[in-house]
Amino acid sequence: MTQSPAARFTLDPAFGIGEVNPRLYGSFVEHLGRCVYDGLYEPGHQQADEVGLREDVLALIRELGVTTVRYPGGNFVSGYRWEDGVGPAEQRPRRMDLAWHSLETNRFGLAEFIDFCGKAGVEPMLAVNLGTWGVEDAVRLLEYANHPGGTELSDLRAAHGAEVPYGIRMWCLGNEMDGPWQIGHKKPEEYARLARETAAAMKMVDGGLELVACGSSGFGMPTFGTWEATVLTECYEQVEYVSLHSYYGLEEGDTDLDSFLACGEDVERYIEGVVATCDHIGAKLKSPKKIMLSYDEWNVWHVTRSPTMPPAEDGFAHAPRLLENSYTLADAVLTGSLLIGLLRHADRVTAASLAQLVNVIAPIMTEPGGPAWRQTIFHPFAQASAYGRGRVLRVEPDGPRHTTARFGSVDLLHATAVIDDETGDVTVFAVNRGLDRPLPLEVGLRGFGGELRVVEHLVLDGDDPWARNTLDAPDRVTPRTATDAVVSGGTLCAGLTPMSWNVIRLSHAES
Ligand code: AHR
Image (cartoon, rainbow, N blue to C red; front, side, top):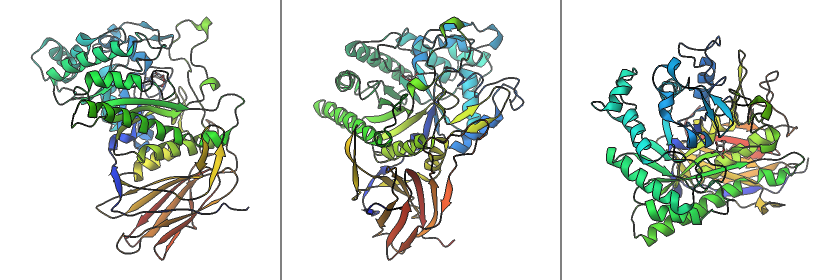
């Protein structure tokens, strides 16, 4: 097989971008389809614990390395009454969920979610309903969740069995409020005012909260830019974050893998556009504060390849199979590239959520009464979370490019690198976007004080871009170890196979 000319970059520990905030490796659980019910929560399953959480799913979530979980939506939250999900489970109301046209039993609510977070070892991130509700209900929920005691709602929480407050630090002020599909969809001025009033009231309860204002629900929205500017002009001093959401997919009949694998370009342009807007408003307001980015929905989502609503004849079905994308090798390589895009902006993207966690556009799949397994996209996320901790180094690639229909000319190499400043260990994450040819990689390692050596080179690749992990073949796509990477004379040389995700770990330590 002929190979491309080499792609090169130089790493120097003096040239850093920023520390990786562990919250970059967050995920998202919504009351949608089988994410909660028949997903992470399935009373009666042989692996369920005493409250109904599946131990096999919890083990996979821990293996995935998830750090935060955003809950309970998504579109669902914009019609959600949080009181429905607290107190004795058998007394909770059954309701229509309008967002996903499903039946909500409320058997899983706030207490179950907090229990789940403790067992999964993740930080909770709660969204309040700013679609059908507003300031008062957000403050009531905050009082119920976080106030120590001695008030109606904090005492109610204690009466429900939770003496110790939940201590939730990070709160989302609604979800995708510029989306016409959103229950209680708002104009930018309407949302900006509601978000400011809600944030101000919540901070009167606890000034230490970290609040996320809704940005546009996508880079492609007509509201993008103007929405962020309007919202931040109103609530710059009340919030810490603005949100970003994006999904990338190939719809039926679309086989343009070159454009698909280049979608990391979109992530980076989107981030840079939001950073520019935040800083423009900050400069206008003469504020020393920097707004951070919460990329709290991102993933591959082939929208037309699995149902987004239950069939009309099902009425309001409970836990229907919605958004159950079965991911391919190509999807996993893009997931790695999207992670690289987030890491390359770690100075401003200090929270992110892979959407979602179980069954619904998810790294983990389950069968009711059956097993749980890792989708292809599980692997790059788990590896990035395991090894992508520390300080991101500046990477300026120089190498071959190719032309894509969607993004024009792009580098074949998409890469980033992270250093652990305590040990000096360095990890390079790299994607070869080329479908047909191996890409030689050469990384200059000046300034690291002594020669680094290759600990391991993990690769996700294969001959079939459409290969998947399924119930019957759960480990068809799994990472392998490559053996040709070497450091010699201060340069790392490695071969990146076509359409591959690569993790190259370097260390000073003797093996
Ligand atoms: O993650 C699926 C849906 O995508 C979420 O509910 C919504 O916020 C977004 O549009």
